[in-house]
Image (tube, rainbow, N blue to C red):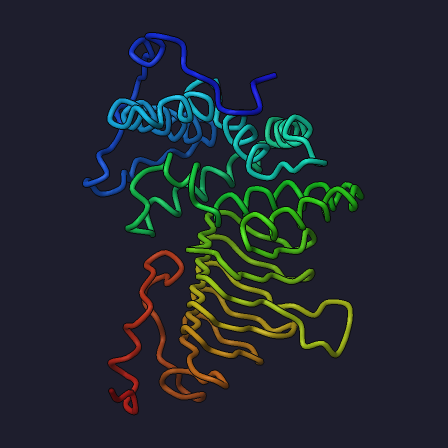
Length: 311
């Protein structure tokens, strides 16, 4: 069992660490190395994280013990992440040791959870220019941490361990200001950018390679129970402050503009903006997107086609 709080690094430990990968400088573009094998992909990302932590500990000694206890002292990504989440989400009555065991058991026994974690790390590193390293995302991105905790809560929910799943749900909201019901289904390669105020309802479904900004609500209408929340296709981009209500479908590769209020289905590869939302190009022949907005993070290209946009 690793320590539950940051410990001092043994003398000379940092300089003796041997890493097989060199870290990418924060000024360099994000790495594009990919692997078809999930284990190889995970190993490469973990080596990058260790190399980045080693570099940061050398350049900022004030963080050396923190980086050692959180990253460099651990043999694997799942142990490091479990340790970090346990410390982040613990309270006076929900102990970090209990949470560490819970997270580690979930991540170590479920390869799909680990693959999703790696995909989420890559999503933040590639799509967000403010994400200077994989280790920065692992340690500091509350959207990433909230999403990984939700994955464990969702696993518990499906195992009928619902009181514990709901306890994690509550801690996610308290610590990260993100409210994701443990029953909600989320794909991989997810970026919750900034993340503050994101609300995702119980029957919501989110595909893979989706990017969601702060203060987005995927909610119900308040009228009915059952299946009542949005279904978000792969590659969708949802801008800051957007609200999508009801059991509506946002098609694959669609873009929802910032502040939009969406109450009906949005076709694939189209852009919906405004309150109430309407399709750029018109309902009959909406403009079609060529890129995947959830990956390109292009929020504003539609403006050139938006004839009544005036400042």
